[in-house]
Length: 125
Length: 353
Image (cartoon, rainbow over all chains, first blue to last red; front, top):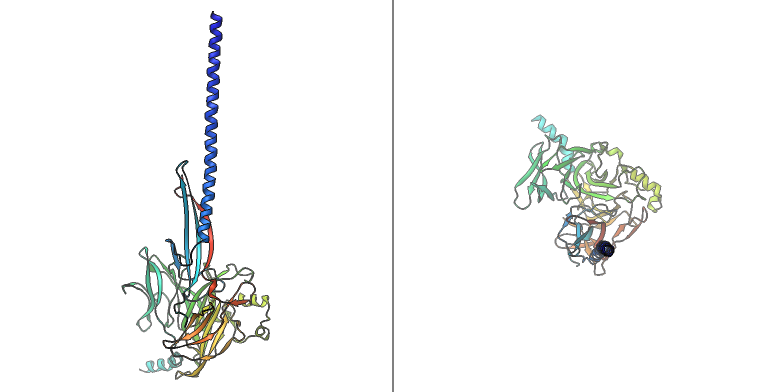
């Protein structure tokens, strides 16, 4: 009778240990999956933001003036230079940002652009 | 009294040679003043004989913002040329002013923390013996590495264009002085260090000069070009080409000019070489006219000389210099503008978690 009790107890203990091992494995695998997904989603978010940013740069209208625009008194770095304000240079900062709540992630891309445009004050005769 | 007469006698050729043809308006600049950007007018105020002041006046209110007594700062003599502004750090506001005295001294005056700093002498052209009356423009230009001389440590240069008048003949000399951007000038530039480009060689006239010749020209501190008369409208630089109309002087002492026609000079910005089939040609004269660009229906840009009532077309197809080679040009058209240049794209992690 006592031997049977020992066997039963051992079996129960074994089962508990096995249950703990399996449960911890499950938790660990879930955590690793989560972390792997988070990294993947972060990469996807970054890729999506960069894609949107480049699309925004390519689709800039000639007369568009973003908020952070700096009008330069003279155009720098030009070989065929101009003397007066006919050639106007603007330094622009274009920003694109994206964020997700679950998992929490945030990405922002900035571009510095130089716009050169001719400003002809008089209309054609 | 005798001293006064002597002074008048001494200065009479200079006064006679100074027949003002070009307007000398104050220069409108953006400056940092009291930690904010403001529009201001910069000009030279005459307080008394030999007492000049570089003055900054608020463009909206007309109040004095700041001033610099030039004689106290070490700048002697008279100044007829307007001051020119420089934005060295490209923050959209002027941080240096360039002054040119009548004898040809070129000074660079810093503007920092809402006050003028100590002027620095950049060039002394007094050995040319001219009367400097106009500072045309200050251009910040950059040469591509394949066109620049090997000796250039900085490809970005300031080109200062000046006009000086010969007292005897009354003819103008156009000067182009080169200064490296950001770097300190190691010496005070003299007129003798400039290449005289008044006469071109036969090879150059046929546009057959080599890239090596071009680099030799660029190795000099700048160039000077004697014009056939007095410049009648403020020269302008369009896409690397300087345009300057010059009227023939009949009598320099009595300020008499031949007002039937004048010569239009069109020269390359860096070497004063020719861009069009001729370096200068005859154009009509218009009183108090200015050089302007006009757009044509086919997007071509033309150069006109215009006053309030009329205008005369001067160049039908404007050319621009290109970086393909040292003497390459291409037609200048409007359809290429605006030009976008992406300087940098970067991932910003401010506020990220």
